[in-house]
Length: 284
Image (cartoon, rainbow, N blue to C red; front, side, top):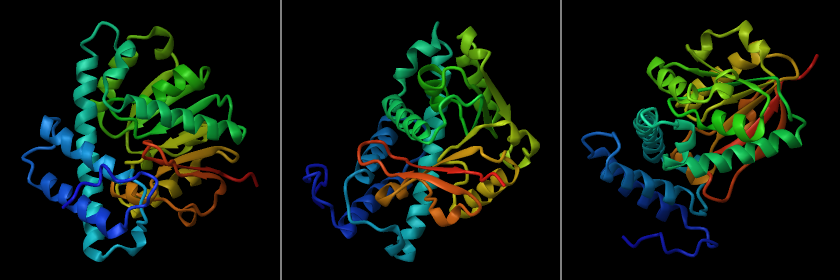
């Protein structure tokens, strides 16, 4: 099968061609002995990402049942690989004298910088400029969005980072502990967000990471829980995916956000993978 990498980037790729190439990569990923970072693992997932950000005519609602199953499996595999990659680099970072000065060692750091800038711009356009308290749900061992936001955009906000994995939080704490000023503004909480209730009322802005809720059904339940307990007038920023990027992350549509006021939906066309959906809980 011919490579798509040299395709004219302005010309949308036929969906069936793109899905065939994605399946090739998927089949190779299934043969891996481990998803831990290695030359082969990194190469396969980098290739997958490059395929998924190519312009195409793909509509995920038109995929066959078999292709939908492959998509769900790929989201799970990519999520697990991403978590292992983050943990490895975070574990290396905490062994350096100044971890905060070496965040750019992470392979996708530039992508997070672009994503955070995009999200801040969307927040600012909708009047969210200096939120007092921010929650990030699903922060992981490399809480790059919180770190970039706190140091470059929301410079006075307090961040509470929620993750279900204490190992991830422990490593993240060690990264932040190298910066005395930032450490005072950033906490890490180990729990299932579905168990957090009244505390959610404290936040002016809540971020929901793309891989919190690996299926649409679970993600919608989490969103409904957050909406129930968050403060009226508070905003929720949900990461989603569009087109072929949906082979990497779950998709959240406007119809999945019942009870919210939709403020913005943005689908990037560059190498940023995640779409951004911003909603507000109405004031009654």
